Length: 224
Image 1 (cartoon, rainbow, N blue to C red):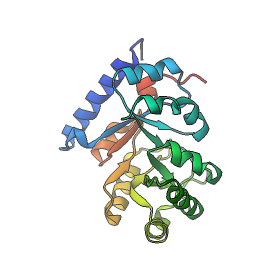
Image 2 (image 1 turned 60 degrees about the horizontal axis):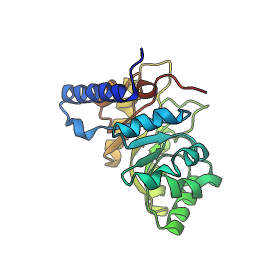
Image 3 (image 1 turned 120 degrees about the vertical axis):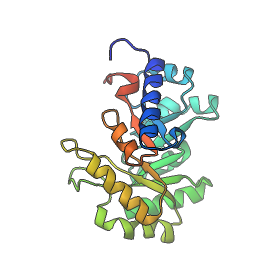
Image 4 (image 1 turned 60 degrees about the vertical axis):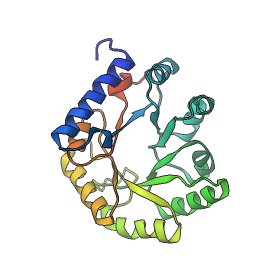
């Protein structure tokens, strides 16, 4: 990474996204960059905001509240995506803070989210997280259960499901799993795909990603 600034990294990643989109004969504007800001120090967040970036992804509701609670009032165009697992007891806070929930993965959560959105009068777009590698340690709905779950979310809970999200197995080539997610989205008539991270977002774009989630590539190594 050298000593490149967050602004320089953002510029470089945007250029790579643009090139990957053109290569895939897609409009670069159809790919959105979600800057993964979890566990990043304040000065790096401020650098990203100063560079004009407004779309961020967070894994934990509480951490996101601390980081963005005050800033949301300052930046009317700020968009926050929840990209980590959501516990049902945190849905109220999540619906109040986030603009998109990317990790819808079980019926109980769908039901609680729907009730909370109704209560708060905020109908947030959702993505269903699919466990494409069928890994026992990962959250996400299994590919063979996706269609029924999608129907439940839309028909029973009236959720606004816009797309699918996945985190492929770390030790296997991701393209197979990106293609699988795209195939499943097409079967359901869904437009959006959240897939691809710092190491593989170009492959994800080639296979139809509309949102790529990049942390290290923008902010450098995480500081725990």
